[in-house]
Image 1 (cartoon, rainbow, N blue to C red):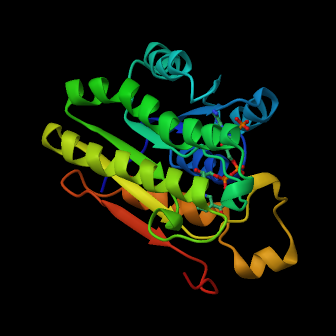
Image 2: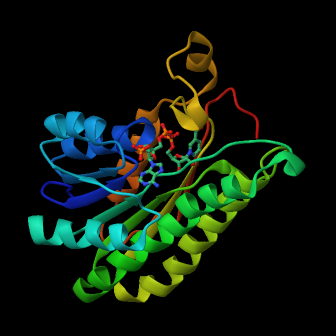
Length: 235
Ligand code: NAP
């Protein structure tokens, strides 16, 4: 089993929702967490609990993505784990979907994952070790009406991670992809915590436990894909 104590982990989208739960759980396991998002106040509040580092950054910007990795390395002198979790989505009939909204979703979900991996992979390859965990969605494996942009972005993000898995495996670097179903978060401007969502959605901590599981596998094991749903969700 891989011990997470003192491992340095970047978690994107850590200001709320799934990313915040991942950051808190990894910190509880003894990891040094670098929490990334654009909302400074929420990140600072989180960092008081994780006692790690927070970096206010936009993952869709290449300069920011490079800075996240270089600042982590100069602060901690090491990087072991990258969790590409930050993501956005909105839903509408195709003919009413704005092209600018399409770009926002792809820039965050696909380009953001690509840019963070691009910045971290040379370091992981050089040390012949590292673990990238991507939070995609079960919609990376199914389609549904009004989901053209979000669904396409998650298929694309999944393809980035799956191709990268094959590229870096010979260098000792792991890539694991997690596919959650419905999760009770702030996603798409929703408010979590309703009694209805408690029955129909996963908690962010459920996804965090899945991340912990893939990260704690022994050095010779890689979990390529892990899908989880609330028991009530047919998909
Ligand atoms: P959320 O509560 O809205 O959280 C999204 C996080 O991403 C926030 O911390 C947000 O922080 C960050 N973020 C967004 N754009 C960013 C950018 N350009 N740069 C840096 N950080 C950015 O949503 P969530 O449900 O936790 O979503 C997390 C991931 O899970 C996403 O990839 C989503 O697609 C996936 N997912 C969600 C569900 C679900 O049902 N909720 C299901 C399957 C998969 P700032 O706004 O502060 O930057």
